[in-house]
Image (cartoon, rainbow, N blue to C red; front, top):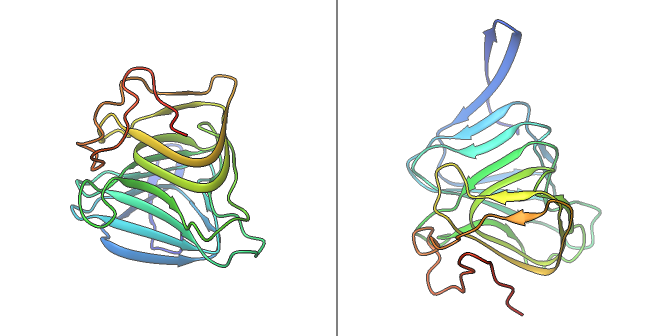
Length: 198
């Protein structure tokens, strides 16, 4: 991801693990590809802004493991041939900040973007373990795997999308009653069954 990496030797050979103690805004330009499991350990919130590119998990995990929340923002030039979304066969383990200007927001696509915003096979490519709002206002989303809460987050996941298709084993975790604890207050919660708000 264009950031420093920590390499360690293990019994099975060389393993790359990336750990960052970052907070505030970190702006990355172009496509970003994980080269190892990546953890953000800060006790303060982090907004990871990706301009004109995708976040390719490449089979690895992106997680915030500290007490601070993580928001991933996709932005850039509309009309270009970029992908503005998470991709790859890894895992997104994100819990949104619970306060501040990005409180409750886990993933955000700039609403001025209308091209390169669609997400196919979300839920298993990459796996989504997300607590908070996923804001993809012009995206067509195909959910083909399960969506669970993040390892450290509350039971809450809201999506704002243009349209959604749920197929195969697609499912969103039950009992999403923790939205206030996730920083999303006065939001329609689905409870045990989920809700589609039109």
